[in-house]
Length: 373
Image (cartoon, rainbow, N blue to C red; front, side, top):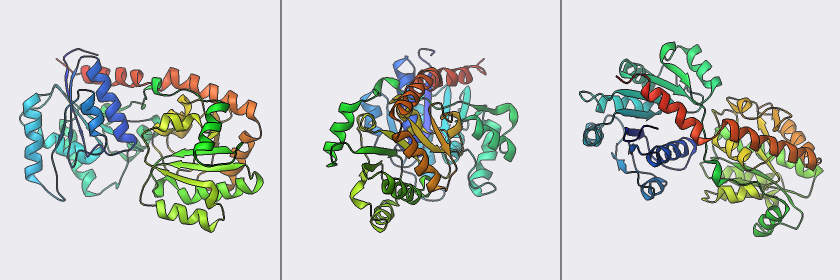
């Protein structure tokens, strides 16, 4: 990283989520390398803003209201003018066209946008129209995996010369593979009987994660293996529906909605296997973290999941919307602990080589500086 490089990240907010975690970790890494980094939140600060400020990275909230908010654009313009960033790095479409508009007349040397998730949202809508207008003042558009890059390219949203893939990365030092003692401790903490095998999941409880499908998969699994429990870490609009589905399936006593947690690395150490039922994904931070924790994974074969989970190497891939297939794959790993442990070790080795925060930061630096005079 180039010491002293001035970088402003623009996001909608810093509430808990995969995008926000990427921004926080990247901004901290850049700050620790000697760059002058700040984060501008278009709307509210968000629940994770304090983490960045504690690390020495300023966070500014622009307080945007619904619709066109000239005052919020003015506040963002003031944040940029005060730092005069060499790099403007925006995240997703709304932050991008607002950031580009606020930077008019004080254009940074390099403007980068990252499209998180699968990169294509509401194609043809107002947001995409505004995003396209902002591309004339954009140097690089990054997707978070090759699958997303291919989808954005096929949709014709971004000129090929500006489009790259920069896979997400995580701080590996926060994650340590667990063992029998950690699993037993977590089962006791959650009030589960000794010997319970815990299937873990982390993510927002929304339609994209298909929590109802996860409950159905667990119902099938639990019928064959009564020694199992499902622990879901995360909150969202479908939490009540998730809990109701567990009651209707007769497994409520073994389905635990743990809500938002700040101790995800510790919880992962206590899981036996990691499960993902998503209908759509980009390049999942949760899967990277599961790899770093040495967990065998069963995930749906959507988005960039196949770029993280190599089928039968560090986990299993199953079709989306097929709870029976998810249950069968989970059961096969629980029935073969030696195979599951080998998959977990393979996942840890893979993420060390390909999924680190340092690798992601280096890749972004290359794009930041390639167009500098």
